[in-house]
Image (tube, rainbow, N blue to C red; front, side):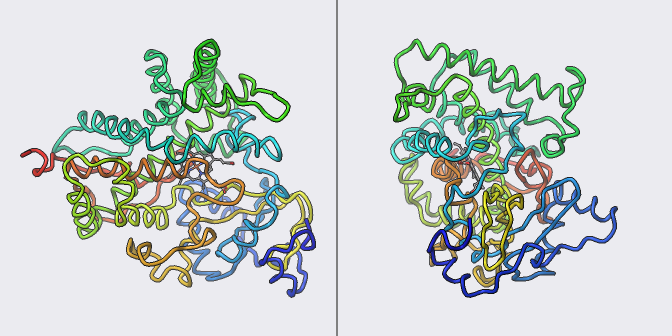
Length: 471
Ligand code: HEM
């Protein structure tokens, strides 16, 4: 796409700039092969260690070019200005470059499909994750949280992240599959837990050469077999549900969906979408919850202010009222700003020459919005490395400045569900438990699958909150 195909404001702005090419963009110059491999390693496993120096070196550079051997040339978009130019361009002039999940999730997921098919699947899926549809799950979310908390070793140190994954997995299974056959529901939980526990899952997803199936005991072979079992269970559920009355969950919707020609989705398309939704929802929301618990207890004033809001709602708060609480909402936003669970949005691949802020980007170059660096921009966020929920009380950030869920035609379909779930789960936990962080040192982001969680899974101690136990 050239800058003549649209008249959106960012292109009007760039029209006056000289026409430069990809190679004119400032480059991440990495001397020496060893340094380069180290950077790649850091970029995948300890990305903040790689991104923070980029930030100090390039400060407010809108774009940074990086070309690493074996990977397509890439441009990182580091400012709201650059992200606006990308997100306001005609969305389907970019292809998806997100094949990372295909071996595990399948080829028919929202992440991997494009064009009219992508648009059609989103139209189908989006309504089930919004408004009244998700509010109906408030009670279930609180109950699941309650059941998981009942198994915590009170007074003892434990990593909270795996237990948050239990909550988000159970919630998304209910949202997607309703109250399906209990045996199958239990099996899916176990299989997903095993898959997500796989050591070096990220390395296997990002490095294709590691994806060699050397039998059930080899790391990739194990993952492939787990995926196969999950896929079989989902197909069995789909087959059963085709003979049952339609239900008001995501599977029910996907089964009854028809496009303009009356075509329905086939079993493989439905299975792949379910797989992707299960993975995306479970991983990202659990990571966001872990960061929220960390930041809430990093500063006692933040915790106390949330508790004050919750007390005003009475002992059995309604989930819809919880979701409206202004300070709790600001805390969730600030958590996602300062500790985004995915540091990059899905890379976009221009299908034709694309003019980005005056630079002509050829097809084949990947455009990668860096959520972390956009959220660190001191021109938008004063003192960006400080946790200040108040900034969200006094100001509405644009969809290019605050991008934890990405944007444009690929904006996260589950963002409303995730925000609602974060608030309901946090309210239930804070109402019932008192937490202490075990380490006094700042938590570092640690890679976990495709997301980043507080190091060590965030080790805490929990005890019953007195106010609640006396009631
Ligand atoms: C706090 C929790 C979550 C965060 C931070 C998050 C973040 C993201 C981000 C950054 C993207 C890429 C968007 C882009 O490139 O523009 C994305 C895409 C996606 N997310 Fe989420 N997500 C979360 C929860 C969920 C949940 C609960 C679901 C499902 C119910 C979900 C399903 C998806 C799907 C299917 C996509 C692909 C959308 C597409 O390509 O059309 N996510 N998410």
